[in-house]
Amino acid sequence: MFIATAIVSALLAVALFASGFSKLRKDPKQLQLMEAVGFPKDKMWLLGVAEIAGTIGLIAGLFWWPIGIAAAIGVMLYFIGAIISHIRVKAGFSTPLMVLLVAVAALVLRATTA
Image 1 (cartoon, rainbow, N blue to C red):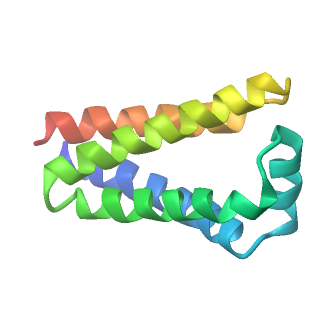
Image 2 (image 1 turned 135 degrees about the horizontal axis):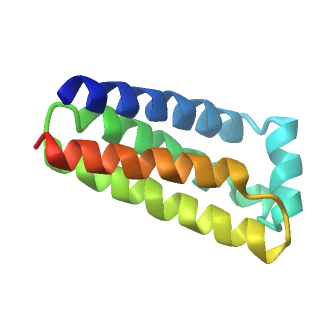
């Protein structure tokens, strides 16, 4: 079961890192998305830092389970907020929903292998 935990956590960490890094370097696609959901572009770095922190927490959580559980919960809360932001402006929310579901899987797997 730990192998499944490691795979799901690593895949989620890679996705979070890519997204966070693109926010930190102000990728034009990210700027466009932030404008669409009404998030201030000058605060986008905060989202990038949160995603990079989630990445670090998920990877560290493979070595110490409480960090993994806390990181998965944090990622879930982040993407619940993203879904709410998308719904508020009537934008599609399938991508944050998929990431939320993967974060739930990471939480369940990490909790069962603790």
